[in-house]
Amino acid sequence: MLDRSVIVTGAGSARGIGRETCLRLAAGGWTVAVLDLDGATAEETARLAAGNGVQAIGLSCDVTSAEQVQAAVSVIERDLPPITALVNNAGITAPTRLADISEAEWDRIFAVNVKGMFLVTQSVLGHMRARRYGRIVNLSSVSAKRGGGVFGGVHYSAAKAAVLGFTKAVAREAAPDGITCNAVAPGLIDTDITGGKLNGELRQQILADIPVGRIGTPGDVAATIAFLCSPDAGYVTGEEVDVNGGMHFD
Image (cartoon, rainbow, N blue to C red):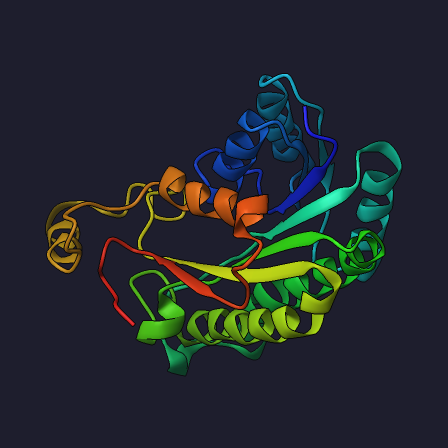
């Protein structure tokens, strides 16, 4: 068992990238702290992670609330080994067209995808700096690069593009303290968000645009995140790692 902890936000979903990331890291010996707005699903992910023989806790946390984020990080610092890695996975999307997006919906998309990432990163950065070591991984999206996608509107695309800018700025600022910060930009992944919606003609149209010929799995993304959290990734920072089966090339 490793004497270090990873925080994964938005990791309660049963078929999500966050839960799969928790299980992948737990299998590698990490202590796992699961944050999710739904405390019950966070605890379920933690129970599954603990099945790998590691310590794991699940906490209810609204990442858009500075008070809740600070409280959760305080519990993790008190009860678990040092926070060594953070995976900012919490996010929401909506396929709303530009003309139909309300101000409230725009604000909500940015609050969860961008403000939440900022609040959690800010809360853990001081702890990482004190130890002169840390790994931060932020979840962006191919939509940030392609200008939208099947399940995300312009607000989602803009928010996930903001994730990329935030990642590069944090990477530059935190590097002297031994902290790396990278982004992972998944393509279309078979999660609860897409489940049941990828059928028939739509599925065939999407597959025709993916050179590897299949839709991605949460495990495809989790494997990349696990590497970026590892000591082996110490010379990788400020990068955007695409996991999309070739549907977008830089």
